[in-house]
Length: 238
Ligand code: PXP
Image 1 (cartoon, helix red, strand yellow):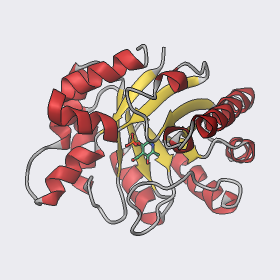
Image 2 (image 1 turned 180 degrees about the vertical axis):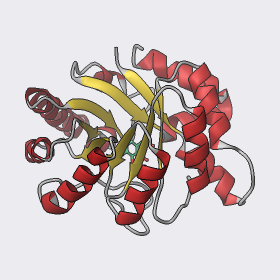
Image 3 (image 1 turned 90 degrees about the horizontal axis):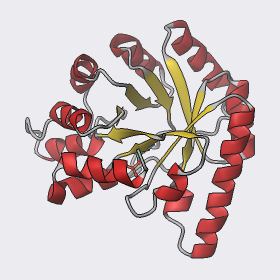
């Protein structure tokens, strides 16, 4: 069974639009849990545009399933990870001014810097995943870095402009997932997934967990959050 970790960043985006107290991402985490989600994901960005430091503290108190925190590989973020001790840290690239994460981290090129950072996290007994593009070179670099898990970026698949491009992106995803398994890596996936496009990705046997945010939170405005989580669980066959 594929697990669903709901990314609640955009609940905080709405709150931060008015620097108000609501909607509270911690309340969202509780509703996701009640609706059957297997975990909660959030991304603490350098610019704090959505999730704030205090949200992490409160999420750590409330989330008893699995808390995955996405962050850049910086000294400040290492400190934050050590303070709040999520179940998993997913290292992502972050570019100032980007609307959303634009691609996977370049594990092959950044090997030396990532290696120091991953070692520090693992010494603090925090599990580490790398968000990477579904390319064999990146999978092999991630395995060489000693992480236990990778999150494969599904953006190329989700945003493909034609059936042909989508099929090509899907084939690359399937090959990357197979190589990750051969190298002993657990496989998560996410970015741009919706109830309409998620099933083929959920059906890839190596995919253990999906991290899905924007579509669930967008649909929750009309359906309610519990219902939006339930329809995604249904779409992934969980
Ligand atoms: N995985 C990672 C690493 C991300 O940065 C994001 C977006 O914050 C997601 C998954 C979720 O993507 P989406 O919001 O498009 O579902």
